[in-house]
Length: 84
Image (cartoon, rainbow, N blue to C red; front, side, top):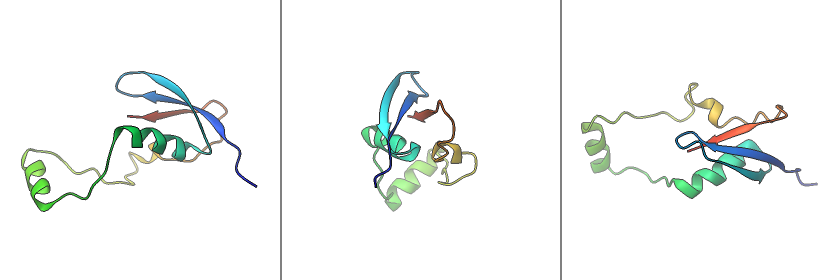
């Protein structure tokens, strides 16, 4: 038996734009939207040096301050998901 889908309101934090997205869970909804906007590649040593020398800091995935973005808590009746 497959999981039922739910409708999520996806809101861009930067622009305030919103859209509706059908997904099995919040993580799937956010991933779908993020993959339209972002890509992820392993940084080369040159990129690391260049970016850190320019003052860029490293964000750590799984940081408690960021964990609410990827949670799968679907218990709220009117959920709003956020994607960049």
